[in-house]
Image (cartoon, rainbow, N blue to C red):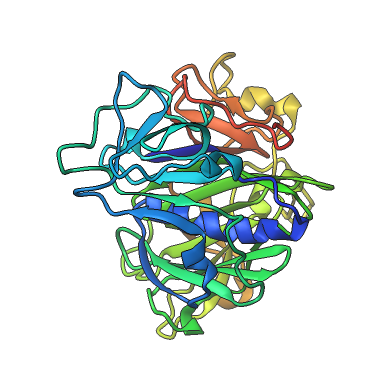
Length: 388
C-alpha cells in the first residue's frame, strides 16, 4: 500500500480556488498511487501548475536514511519560492515508503529542501536514488495558474483492471468525480450520471488528511478550512467477492461531507451486470440499529450503548466489519448483495474522530464508523482542518 497523510494546500487568496486545488491534487495523488494518465482537456493550467517534472534516470530526486525529511535534487531545481508558495512535492519512488506527497517547508539550497514532517514517512527514508537512477518526481504549485471552472478535466486509469477515473473542476466551488468502469473514454459508461461532488463549500485551504492506494483501489479523504468545514471522501475501486460472471465490479464512492452522513448512506456509482450496462447506485451496509415493523432500517448505525456488541462481549477488543454492498434499486434489479467493499472497514459510529482502532496501528477511524488502513502506530494522525 501507498499512504499519503496531511498534504496541506497553500492558503488560497479566493475561497473558490479550493476546487481548483482539489482537482489538481487528486490527479497528482492518483499518479502517485500508480494510476496512468490517459487524457485531459488541454487546459493550460495542467502544464503551468507543474513547475518541475523530473522523470528520473540521469536527473531526479534522491533520499537518504541519514537525512530525514530532506530531499536532494541532482539537477538543482529547488528555489526559495517553492517554500513561499507552499508548493507540493510528489515523489514517485520505487520503494513505497519513499513515495510521498508533501509541502516543501524549508529551502536549504538549490539541491536540498525539507518536507513537512506531518507528511513525511513515519519510519524515515530508505536509501534510494543516485548514480543515474534518480527518483521521478513533480513539484506542483496551485498558485501558478488556475484550472478553468466547468471545463477542466482529466482521465486516469487504474494500475490493474480497466477502471477509469475522471476528475472535473465543475464549478468554482465543486470538484466532480466520475468512474468509467469499462475503461472507455466516452461518457456512455460514466457513473454516476451526476458525478460525486467534493468541496462544495467556501474554504481557503484544503488538506488531504488521509489517502491510501492499493492496486486499483484509491481512497482520498480531506477537509476544508473556511467559513464552513466539510469533510469530503472519494474512492475509486473494485468490489471483492463478486459473483462469477460479474464483469463490471468497478465503482466510485464519495460524498461532499461525510461528517453529517451515516456510513450506509454513502452511495456508490457503478454499472449493473445487464447485457447493456447502465448506471446503478449501491449502498454500504452496516449493522442494523433498529427498524420499523416492516423491517425497514431507520438508522443503520450503532448507538454507544451497544458498543459491547462490537467488542464481541470482550472489553478492549474491537470488531472490524468488511461491509457488504447492496444494490439500491430493489424493484428493477432485486435487493441482492453485489460484493464486499475493498480496503475499508466499518464499525461504531460513536468512536472519536481520527482514532487509532488498535495497538498495532494498522487501522484508523476517521468518522461516522468509517475505518481505513493506517501506516503503523508511529504514522502521523490526520491534522484537523484549521491547523496551520
